[in-house]
Length: 118
Image 1: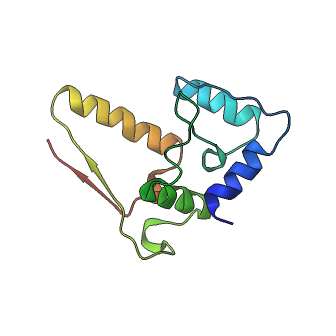
Image 2 (image 1 turned 180 degrees about the vertical axis):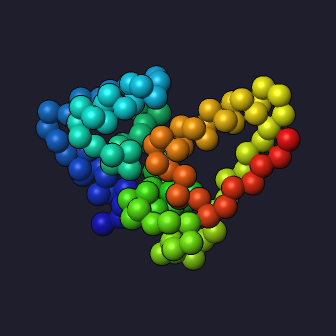
């Protein structure tokens, strides 16, 4: 069973589970706490209900690394995943917010390296 199939079974397999739309980080944290789930256990869907990201190789790799809780120097795969961050003026503020979100969601360890430019 692939990690995404397990996530679907764990999250969607619950008969009383309802779809929840989160539009902010705070709403996401509330739902994670409410259902006692971690980020990698969520079933993420587009607004029209179809799951287009589950087969994306980068999303699958990030999901696998989050689930395994490996560190950048000790990932159990053959890939090197980098995060490129742009900066300069307002873009730097937006990028800082994105990085802060990755930190609070404990996703930063999924990346092997981080590159930035301004």
